[in-house]
Image 1 (cartoon, rainbow, N blue to C red):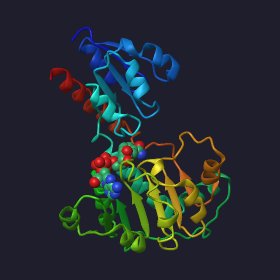
Image 2: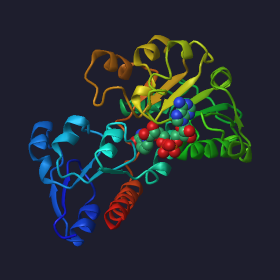
Image 3: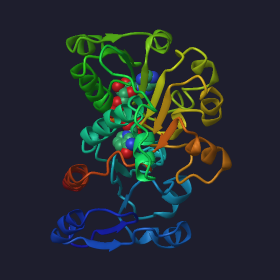
Length: 307
Ligand code: NAD
């Protein structure tokens, strides 16, 4: 495999680069490379390693005359034209399991952050204030947790919710009734989930069906004081609709936005709203998840090459 050339266009762990280098691959590590440069050199490479920053669209794929593998360092493949790549005989691999625990733990953290107004307290105390009694919180115990998408991450968040004494309601296009019932939860229709949930946590992939799944019509149906948490993909929520409903919602925590990093005024309006907390897409940013991504992706690449 000595002459296989790999281009890495985003930041990855040293271990990952080392593992590939030890196998004798030619590696160019160019984190942050811009689109134009990438288009100019992509035809020299057999494997492209990337995260979510670059759109791996038809145009780019067409320029990659020697591409054999598109390797997403992470999970989400919504920036890749998978069908087109496959049609051109290019394998698409990712690391779907590596970040599950980290994202689920972040989700739980965000839910607690909102329910106890931790961000407000922390900010005030840092400013030298002592606002005891100012932001009275709520317990999670006994509340209804609505999980949208009961896959790897959603099912884990459901477990955490049950451990805290929450009632778990699940909406998924697949029949996951048996699995949900095993942990004492209930699979319901989307409308029922909207009507009963005190917290709605989103864990669906971004697809044409989930694009703006949380829209004005849907937000009209949620309870007053409902908390919305999104650690899936920004485009699952219609930002304009969310802003419109903020007064009625209990709080919103987002690890993902429709535009990352935010540039449009509407997103700054959202970020600065006192009921909203935003983290900069850090779901997988733990030592453990990064390590697992490196191993999982390395193994997937080697599997394709051996095959
Ligand atoms: P998964 O594929 O294991 O689970 C997704 C679930 O959603 C499946 O059960 C599927 O049946 C369900 N689903 C798909 N379309 C649906 C629809 N239209 N309506 C209802 N349910 C639907 O995915 P996962 O690994 O649990 O990841 C979930 C999300 O988390 C993805 O959007 C992924 O991109 C995102 N993610 C975010 C971060 C981060 O850093 N914040 C990191 C990793 C993954």
